[in-house]
Length: 76
Image (cartoon, rainbow, N blue to C red):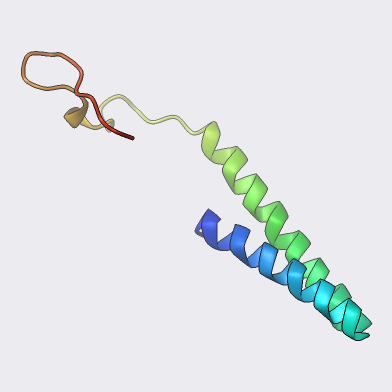
């Protein structure tokens, strides 16, 4: 699942939960907070596990070097 989608959905659900609490809809607010907490945990765990995944050297892109063997500057 896309980490950006998980982050945005957790923020939106947290905000909706606050609005539900202020409107007096306590069960909907609690449900929204629980779903937001779950998506935030999944977002954090997906980012954590992607850090430790290694890529084999043969899969790494060959576009990082030009013909003379010098590194190519990339803006980002």
